[in-house]
Image (tube, rainbow, N blue to C red; front, side, top):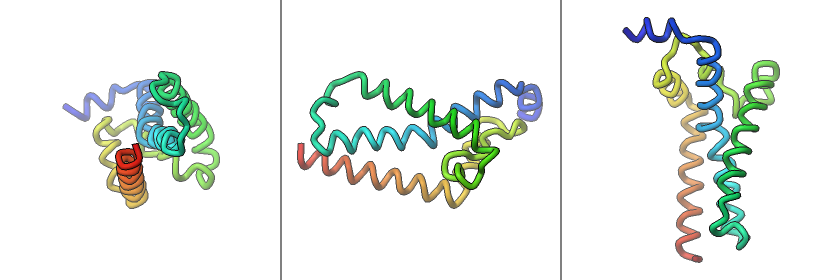
Length: 128
C-alpha cells in the first residue's frame, strides 16, 4: 500500500515535500537560534514583537529555496543545508525524515542544536 502511494507522488508534490523538510529541519533551527541569541544579548526590541516570528519564517523559507536551488549544482558549498534524501520520490515523508536522521552528520546537527538551545534557555531563565 505504501508503495502505491509513493508511486503516485507527483514531481511537484515531491519537490514541495523536500522544500518543506529543508526549511523545517535545516533552516528554521538556524534562524530561531539567531533570534534567540539576539534576545539573549539584550535586544529589547524583540520582546513580544510578532515581526521576529515572521522574520524567522521568511528567512527559513528563502534559505531553503537557495539551498534547494543551488544545492544540487554546488554540493560542496551546500552540504550542511541541502540533503538529496529529501527529494527521493520513492520515499514517503516519514521515510525521508528517518533516512535523514540516521545519517551521522544529521545526528550531529540535531545534537548540536538541542545542546545550544538548551544552554540558551538556561541562560535566559537565569538572567531574565
